[in-house]
Image (cartoon, rainbow, N blue to C red; front, side, top):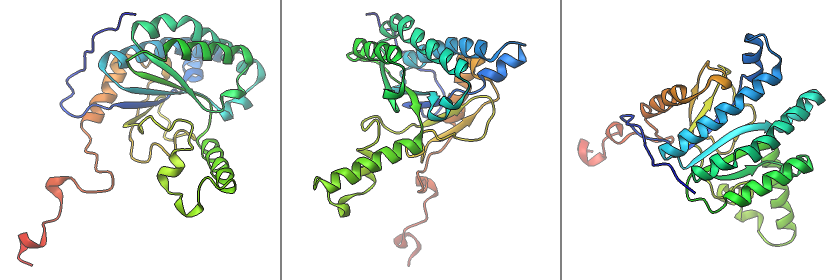
Length: 258
C-alpha cells in the first residue's frame, strides 16, 4: 500500500478536518448535455474518485458523501437498479484507489436495505480498508437524518425499558451514542453542489454548527478547483459556536470599573 504524501494547501486560515458533501446535480448536468439522467450518475463517479483522492492527499481526516437517501428508493425502478449497479461497481473498482491513498471506507444508514450483492461488496471493501491509517470515507447509503434519529430514539427507549439507562440520564451525548456513527466528529464544512439551498435530511444532528458552502457547479463537474474554492471560503469564516470571538467579547466588569 502506497500512501500519497499530504500536500495541504495554504488557505490563509483554518482547514476543515471533516467535510460533508451533498452531491447534487447529476440529472441536471446530464440534461444540459442532452443525455439521460443515468449518464450524469455515471459521470459523477469520476468526481467521487477525484474529490476522495484530493481530500485524502490534503490531509482531510473525514469525508462524508451523501450517496443515496432513504427517499431515493421512491425513484423509478430502473433508475434505482442502475444506481445500485453503479454503487456495486464503484465498491469493486475503487478498492485500488482507496488502498493507494490509505483511505478507510465506512457506510452509514440503513445498510440492510441494500441489495444483497451490493451489501456483500460493501462489507468486503470495508474489511479490506479498515486498517488503513489515512482518511475516513463515509458513504451515506439508504440514509435519512430523521430516520437516523428515530432509530436512535427507538434504541434509547428499548434500553430504558430493559433498565440499561435511566430516562433522567439521557442528554445530548447519550443520544449521540445511539446514532449510526458514534465516533466521527461532526462536519466542519458542509458543501452542496448544483446551487440548491437546502440540507435534504442530511446529518441534521451533526451539522448544527457546520459551515455551509453552496456552489452552482453540478456534481459531475465538481473537481479540485471547486473543492479549493470551498476550502478558501471556509478559511475566511470565523466559527463562534454560539459564543463570541475573543477580541469581540464584552469587557469584564474589572476592566470597566464596575
